[in-house]
Image (cartoon, rainbow, N blue to C red; front, side, top):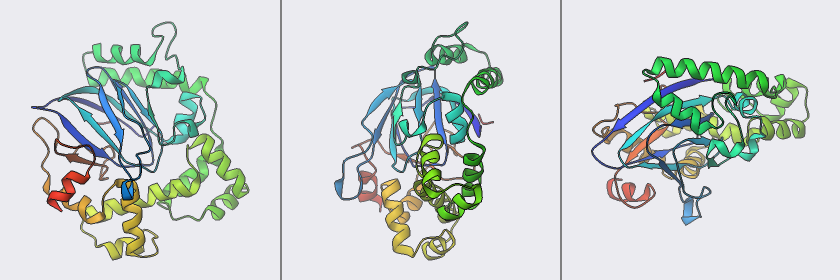
Length: 299
């Protein structure tokens, strides 16, 4: 488990947010209005990987593409961030089935507690009926404890390799990871796809860019960021940034610095503490391009 975050918004109109890849599986247990999620077109107008969906509760696996989240101004629920190998155990499914996908968690057939709730939607409704975030988080602790006890355990070698990749912020060579845990590169790749969701090279890309976004947001230059985060050069960083966020580093950091939080939303609504993971977009055409063409409760 990484974190729980409770959200209850009632804004003055529709809201749109660009969400970029992070090194975690995301579960939103919603108990109000649906959230519309769609993919972002890739460089050169390439078709978005994720088709649009409208869901109250949402499960998103690891991936290397950004998404747009839109709601009508009302949104309530608990967002849970999970280490990918923990999600493998909790949901009992091969995580490559979730890679670069957004779906209703009930599509996996998980039954939170057959004696109390027969679906994730019923669990989400029960959370919404509780009087406080503390009570909701406590209930989730109980439910996830039962899921973890009943689910397939992740390989200790997978967890070790993932932990080393996170520790190195995506710079550990895949061959080194395989050697460290006593697997061949092929074995490591297969286990990552099963228990992490994407291969180790793709996971490293996500973690490197996560660090790069944080450095850029804190004022470091692109050349320095590229060197520290393991990119060949500034052009390599820019290309990876564009591929995984839909915009350039300069556009992302400029928009982060100039766009105030909309009325009714907290000033820092990123999914990971201290990590720039989100960008509020103005109402208008789908995709962040329209913006850039004009402007250049936690636990």
